[in-house]
Length: 199
Ligand SMILES: NC(=O)c1ccc[n+]([C@@H]2O[C@H](COP(=O)([O-])OP(=O)(O)OC[C@H]3O[C@@H](n4cnc5c(N)ncnc54)[C@H](OP(=O)(O)O)[C@@H]3O)[C@@H](O)[C@H]2O)c1
Image (tube, rainbow, N blue to C red; front, side, top):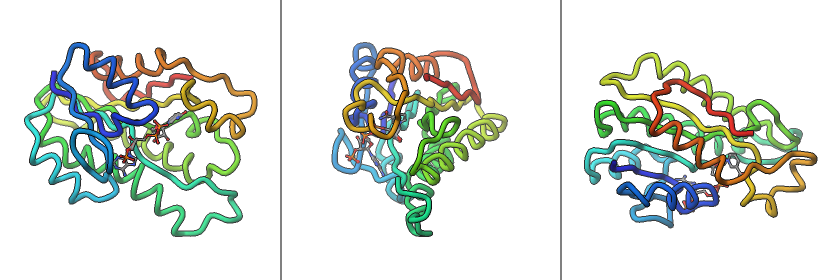
């Protein structure tokens, strides 16, 4: 399969990429890192990336940002970071990507445990994740040409524990193998409209 992985060089993305590239042709993308560049917060950037790629069998996004800050300090602009990057970045990837995905191909988006189990300072990040879950369920009903869409929602992953431990008191870190399996299930399974929770 030809698989595009946006964020393929990130903490989660690099583990997913190393597993998939054993058997598939992988193209990684990021703003600075990867085989090609894209900023998902800019739909023109998504469009020009897609125009320069061959027909894809799977489009995976393991990228997107949202501002973490105390609720009392989050400004309107702070919310727009998450809305433009993680939320609309992934929505636009699907909206524009349908024309560049083969029949029967799949989209796999990324959210996270905050949608169900937020911690402090995540009013924006949790909201974005929740919105994406609804988007995936609804868009799955209307994708054409047997295309599918799912989202992987992981808990704090093992490889990010050092960075985020203090924000997730009492949470169990998710082994990377289980996280990777969430992506494999979306790409190679038959599920559509699924929120694949890996907690
Ligand atoms: N870490 C966790 O425990 C965890 C758990 C559940 C969910 N998540 C979610 O999973 C996603 C990835 O997390 P991570 O920990 O792997 O993050 P990470 O290490 O920061 O990696 C993010 C990757 O995405 C790329 N990227 C970021 N913004 C982008 C943009 N606007 N356009 C294109 N590429 C972009 C980055 O590359 P460039 O810098 O080159 O752009 C990088 O390769 C995030 O949405 C995060 O919320 C993370």
